[in-house]
Image (cartoon, rainbow, N blue to C red):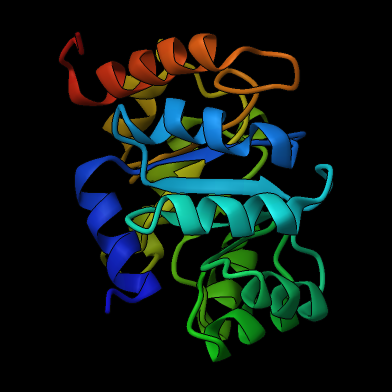
Length: 213
């Protein structure tokens, strides 16, 4: 049986892009999920401020066993337990909350808390974070990633989130970003699955440097 950490490690090697599906409804989870997973995404996040997010997580967890599916905007330890009960294996937060990280680690889930400063970054890692979400990236720069990586433990994944597009990924990668979280540029409520698929391919092409048919 593949563990959440093994799925995360594989995705970080192959395509370290987190699809942030804020506003996704359970009725569209299958079609939107297909549009993202079939081209190559393996990291799926449904923020908890979406309609019936736990239902969407459960549906996608069943439909895409090869993917790491979980929740974003996780703000408390009870929410971590709720996501775990729904089958979620990924916990993403906009902030660093020691109780959230510790509970995710206790349950064997991948946890990516939001950080901006070295103090938050080291605190998150000490609590058991799997990697770090640099958020909001609009407040930072590639130079911030480079500076953080100079002092963080070797191999720490730092993933900028916020304002990431296929056009600006290269400069962040050059600074050492291990991957990205991608939100409204990939999915937003009302966007068709076909349009989501086309944008998913653009992000994949930007990461791999190849064009997908």
